[in-house]
Amino acid sequence: MQNLRDKLLKAGLVTEKQAQEAARDQRQGSAKKHREREKALSEEERQRREAFAAREAEFAMKQLGAAGLVIASNVEGVNLGEVALDEFWHAAVELNAPIFIHPVQAMPAPRTAKFALAQIAQYTFDTTLCVGSLIFAGVLDRFPALRIILAHGGGTFPYLLGRFDCLHARMDRVAQGDVALAPPSAYVRRFHYDTILHSPMHLRWLAEAVSVERMLLGSDYSFPPSDLDPVGTVRKAGFSDVETAKILDYNARALMPRLKA
Image (cartoon, rainbow, N blue to C red; front, side):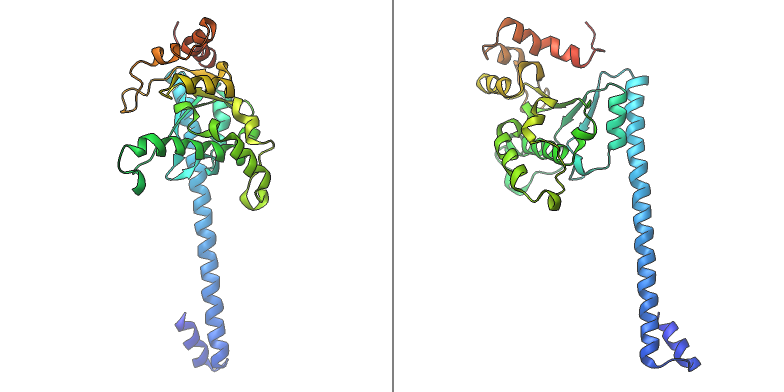
């Protein structure tokens, strides 16, 4: 840009101030073009990723005969509701494919590095953040037929419904980007929940919050927090025989018809 200034001054057509202003304008114009190019490349990459995810979903369901899809609760630290995945969500609906969302953290946060707090709290909280983003970003409203299974009993989402509703009502929804058409508690039965709570009492509470029909047997095998007797845990919760059969078998078959009898 200094060359432009020198050329203008050498030609004797402008003053020093005018030459500096011309060089500045050229710098700003180049920066704007650079930003626009970066934005275009970013949009192009977003579209490629979104299309790839949709193609993989179709391949899994149509070519591999999968019963459903599995995705992580965040993408490189970004909550799913804030990731451009509408093409993927649409594909899942069209394929009638349930989606199992499992938390993921590449590295534990400093305060969860000891005492297994990453597995106890960080993973379940990651699911909660994911659910909040899906609701507030309007994903469930845009795709009312979307079927999502949440790991570990839904993280802390079912137990924070009151707090979710409170802040939905009180936050600056425009500034926060909250476009949900209803309070978060209205979506609690839009999800399905596995039984990895390690507590019969909390399984009973979960059933009251989301209904038995939304609960599926889970084991978390072979990870450290796996339930070594998942069927026994469900049976200890005091459900009726019909309710127990739904949780252990029928609900999963209704959600995933491809499961073998």
